[in-house]
Length: 332
Image 1 (cartoon, rainbow, N blue to C red):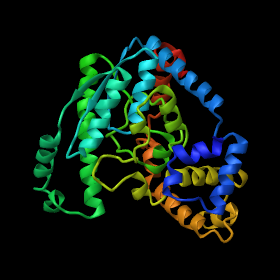
Image 2 (image 1 turned 135 degrees about the vertical axis):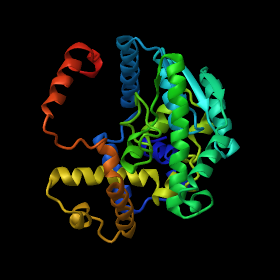
Image 3 (image 1 turned 180 degrees about the vertical axis):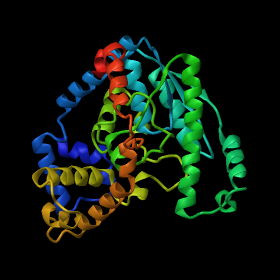
Image 4 (image 1 turned 90 degrees about the horizontal axis):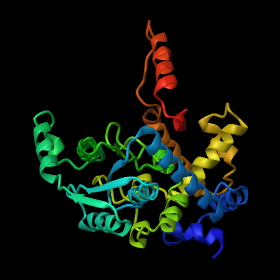
């Protein structure tokens, strides 16, 4: 099978629908440039991730990683990488009104990868939290508009992270972060909710690199073939929420980045011309979806805003202490 066919298969684009000419051309160019890497390169990438995870463990004196096993490919791949790098990995399924198939896939992945597994149903805690907050907003408990679903979804993510950080403290370890590059760009994560301490796959594309690496390292096929979903009850799946496929998303984000390298002063209104969609209406539609979501979530990628302070020079002094005395060599 050619690399292009592999990408279309593992990204599930073959099942979603054919790419339009602009996206077809973009994919061919990304393969040619190596942005969508050959399998040999991905094996080298995975070896480097494993080396870095092992070095982090050794330099910090931490041996346990706690992880939420959602039933999706990201958590399964992350768990597999930590395990292969010599960590003790403790997987937790934490259903909250969850599709039982998702929970079952999370448990199956733990068994297949040979990691510890614990299950805790957080549905009662979630209902209690929602019920308590309805005293502030009665619509929260049963409203079905997108804003209310997102609020309830964020509560689910934060309840799960409370659980994981408690267990990380119990085991003297860290919380493994499962976010990938595509989700980072899409804002598919909850502030103070579902991003952990160490993120081994955050630079990887969801459409190609994540499922390939999951297959390579032994994640069950049922998991890396599954339709991506956040498990938060917000929508029918990630791509339904995005309005585009992950392959379209990744190709568009990479194209936007290249256009801004070529012209750093490029305005949003000039993007369609710069990207050269021509008569490809799908390009225009996807750009609108991608740029709209990037615009709504940029603040998440910045982190906590640290406003200018009269004594802000102290930050640099404190960072100097950390850098000189405590930060592991891997992170310098």
